[in-house]
Length: 602
Ligand code: F6R
Image (cartoon, rainbow, N blue to C red; front, side, top):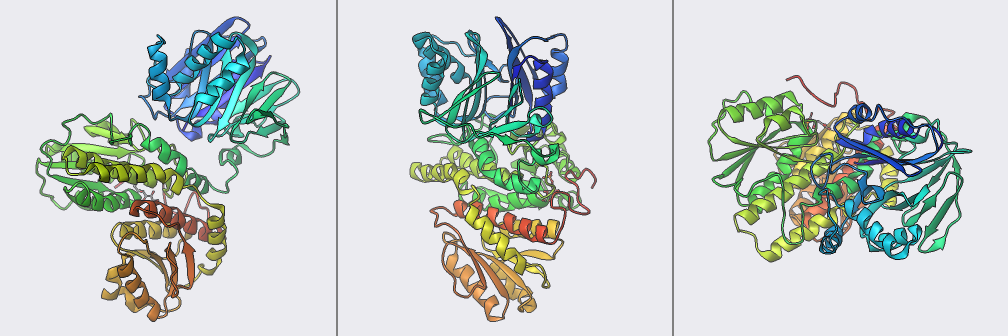
């Protein structure tokens, strides 16, 4: 996810911007850039890769006079990570940085191109600066032009804009993406989180959605809905690590809350109006493929297992799923009509990497779904689709899982379209559901509070069973894995219909059953299985949109149209449940004992 910084003052703006960007590195990025305006001179520089590359490129630039500047770290969502696509984006006399998505950028871009504007990048952001300059040429008033530009934008954004015609001002706007202003007696700063401001600013203004305005060294003019707003400054307190956590207790909690945003990034440019598109896949990619084998470990294995149901049901392609460490030594029979897909958050998991090499050596076509560009797995695979989850710091994977499932779901539709076996109506309703998922994943305060309260009842007992059917069985596996990883309580995921074939023997009041009971997929069958457990006095925590009288505890979900909407909503609930139980037990949620974020040994 992108990070933004800005500076107005007489100190070394280059170093302040670069240091600020370094504090935002934790958000993940693949390129970076800065632009500094000192009277009539504008300096700008961009570099792909680590910030060190930008530092190297700008090392000869010196500044010791009053200047204004903006900087950006970019996590590619639209267009590859190249220098041209890195921010700031420039017009003839203005520069812009942006975090978020301009949903209607294509219409704006097309109309600007028709008027003769030339675009340098593939990004949605570049439209902002050209539209601003067009508006400025008409009104000759910077703020009017900026407001008019905002009126044309649809989507989520945090924007900073500087222009040669207003050499002491930064224009800003926030809608959906974070933006903070920091001040001290003679400097003013912007940042995407507190971290870059610590040690520099004494007070901060946390901008709210739909707020915009401009700032000079001494004053901030803030508006919302055309009305001037009071500036509410707060003292800036805290340390850098807690600032990076953005007010959340743990990175894992922050990452659960981020899922809505990263899922928007994940579908951007892929879930289109009438079809799914992956720019990484050429048209013939699936020609001659009759079978899919997906190989992964841990949470990534669960995303594979869940979506294997979709590959068979929607894309009508036979699909098998393998745990990488098992696959390596089973002397598997592989044939050339199989597409070999590996899934990995880190891209460095030794077992998954070795499985990939085996498949390649056997001559199979390979595809990786990965969250880290340039990782070993991405380099090894023939083709890769990035999950776009941003850096995941909590050892227990959450947002990476969400984006993996999303990519694989979209891939199943892509194949179905390629095979011409999905009707237009079906595809439309799948795309509608996909676009609804970021909303589904917004964490509701009421649900989080409820889970926090419930969690105190689940700190003992002799174990948990997470149960579900169909797609919700792998989600049950994932819910159980999350819980055991960070709470150290024993938890198992099980197919609901399989409990009576053995595990039901464990049922008593101290066996906690977390029952995933979606309305849209085998509700009655799952309900019968849960009733069997309830009859044996198991303690039931039911998660469902439909009231269930036999449960001891009940978390009511939203009535949704599509099973995947229910899947994502229940995913968030099981993650929060694991989080709250483990916080009550006093565990280190982000760094659970015995676990590592990247498992590079077999
Ligand atoms: C669980 C978790 C692990 C990983 C597994 C594979 O929360 O994170 O189970 O999913 O170690 O790692 P990747 O996805 O990096 O290959």
